[in-house]
Image (cartoon, rainbow, N blue to C red; front, side):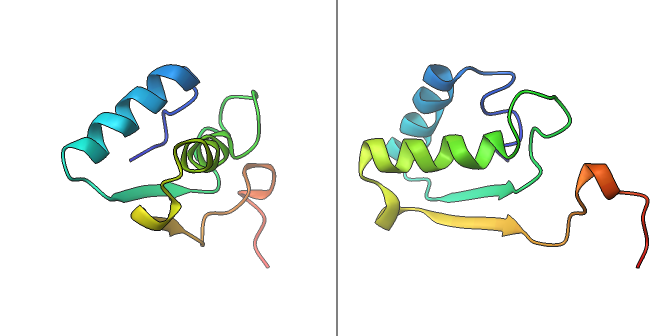
Length: 81
């Protein structure tokens, strides 16, 4: 998973991990819109970091992104429709 990218590892370290993962043949990234939202740094920080890495490295066509679409927003986690 990529939930710690940009939090437990800074952007440079996250890029290095992604570069290594892809150099070893990896190509699927597990992510979610809310990853890292529990720390008030930047909303959707993990996915934004992945986007910046793909753009900077020119790797978008090499990546399969597995994202989750059913996570509630942290601000409304306990609100039911």
